[in-house]
Length: 126
Image 1 (tube, rainbow, N blue to C red):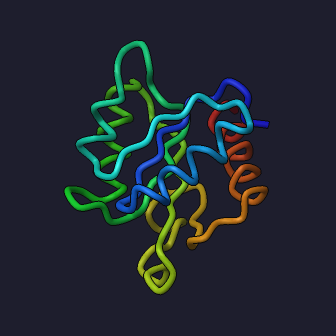
Image 2 (cartoon, rainbow, N blue to C red):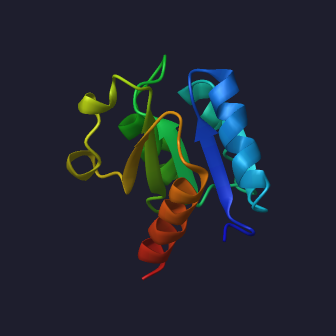
C-alpha cells in the first residue's frame, strides 16, 4: 500500500514518531522522522523530498501549516499532509479548515492512517 512512498513523520514525542516510522516502514515506505520542524526540514533534500508529511499540528518550533509550506517549497509543489494530535487536543485541529487531508488522534489505527495516506496520494496525483 505504501511501497516506495517517501514519508516524513514529525511528532514532539520521539516514541510516537518512532512508532509511526516503524508502522510505515513495515509497509515498505521510505521514512524519516523528527521531533520538531527544524529537524524535519533537515531531512528534506533535493534527493529526498517527501510525498507525504505526517505531523502533529503543534510542534515546539512551528505548526503543521508552517512545516507543510516549507516542505512544499522544497518539493516545488504542495505535499499531502496528514495531521495527528494527542488525545485531548484534537478539538483544535480541524483538517478541512486547515487544508489537511485527514487528522488522527493518538494512538492511531494502523490500517486507517495507511488508507488515508494512500487516498491522499491518489488525490494529489489526479
